[in-house]
Image (cartoon, rainbow, N blue to C red; front, side):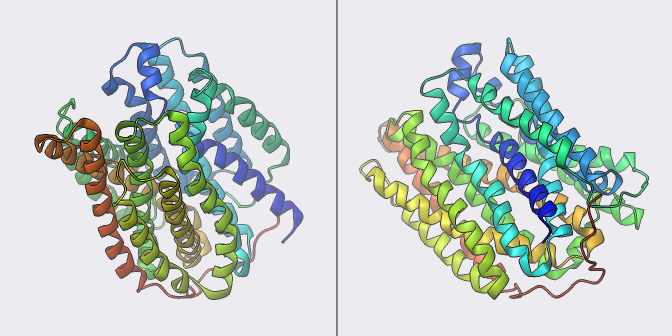
Length: 474
């Protein structure tokens, strides 16, 4: 592969890692923000919820944007938005301005992941895609996994503003280097944009994500509206959005014809289940460490770090194994290992050693690394080139919805488990441990579904019509 292509992909990987990192960096910081800004938990939670809602609103449009504009234009717009949002957040005098900064950040973040995936699928030959997708796995899995670790390290000695001040120069450097080095890899088309589809997508995906994010709060008895209301509204508009895309024929906002490709459909289902488990554990384990074991934010972050690093270390190797063996020989056993690691995690309590928790989470990280790379490679590889942008948008949208669903499901189970254990006479720490175990057992149960879906994967995706050699950069 030409050196120019490698430089471009490396730049996109680095920039995307930085922006995706911010998706989970706020979780550990919320108690500090509540004290510093004098806001309740329900208000502080909007710093995460608004980020997710913005992502869910913008990502469905990225399939159109990637076909309508040049690669360089999208990159500069994304990194400029992210950098601006980071600066606003760092300087924010209060909650309202900080919230605006998070929304602007999320707008740039939503553009970067589909841009990276579409570029890789366009430039990288089929025989090397697994290796490159292994690198992308570092972004989509490791960045969210180590977000709490970075947050814990920063907050152990600095104020919450430094989470943004540290990121800002890196983002500006990526913007400057990209403005100089990024070249166009696709030929844009002057496509019409369907405003009705944009509105339907915004209401549909933001409604579902918002409703799911409320479920965990509702379990604690503190929500502005019943979660079922935005979920039902979102689901209705999602049906309308899908109907509209079919009616638009060859120029939809998000081309749902990607689901006609069997391998893509099964791959995206598996990624959804896997993302639910990943985001669920990312939320649950810090709560367990801090509430059941009275661990500091720094200790909590360090416990999560090895699991994230294992995902990163294994991902490039998994990519090479995919190029050699295909998806099924990797994904089928990894669903079993994932289920086993979650069953092991469900036995963790207050007396479990920290070392055992670290090892357990690291095993879980390795199993997810064995899944994400083959699934992305096989799923997108089954699509024709003209659907790469839409397939990337669908993948990234699913990541947000599955993450919200996993968080909602497991927080609800944790909370109800805490209430039940407290009624049985356990102290607050013991009740948290009991609720944590209940939630992890349900997560392990999802692996049965993942295993069943994995059996339908092909070892290698069938070549899709419309495959073309990678274009020259210009």
